Length: 236
Image (cartoon, rainbow, N blue to C red):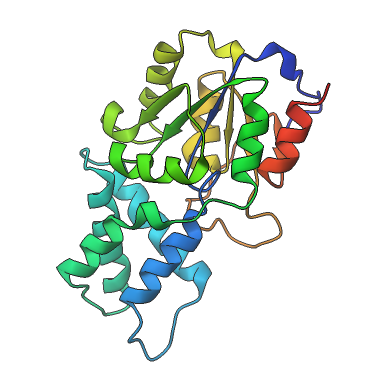
């Protein structure tokens, strides 16, 4: 993080990561993995499950493009097989479609509404169009721009997803502030592209990287939640 406070007045648009930042994907992922592994004699820890999932998902997303529901289904299979369980096709499909059931963080709706009074809002999300639409209904916000992995044909941290967003926004990067939880998926490529970014550190106080692979990045500011960021960004 830099020592210079952000001048929020110089930004016209905020772009958000969705899962992990606005939607509590770790709760959703753990629920799905827990159902698939319910018969185990000894249950693995949440941290172990999330870190195994993160490795599987990142490897799949780095390969040939697959829809996110397929990424989820295959990642579930890889995690389950690590514990000696072979998930059924129905369980894999259900996990792949479960995104719309993942809850929003308690502060997301109000914080987005507050931020929308000052900024135009966009989202750059590693998701399918229809699955993100289900999550968007939980957020209650009409985003000005939406770039999904499905529309880009690739997944963050591929910088392509960000350059597509730049084209759609029609704004220079210096007028855009990216807001995200994942250092790996978001802050690393944002830094490579010269994009200012704010880290919403949802895992503050908890050990381990959770559902994202570990990474090193230098966001411009860090907040523990979206509510405190929204307060700072809209302060007169």
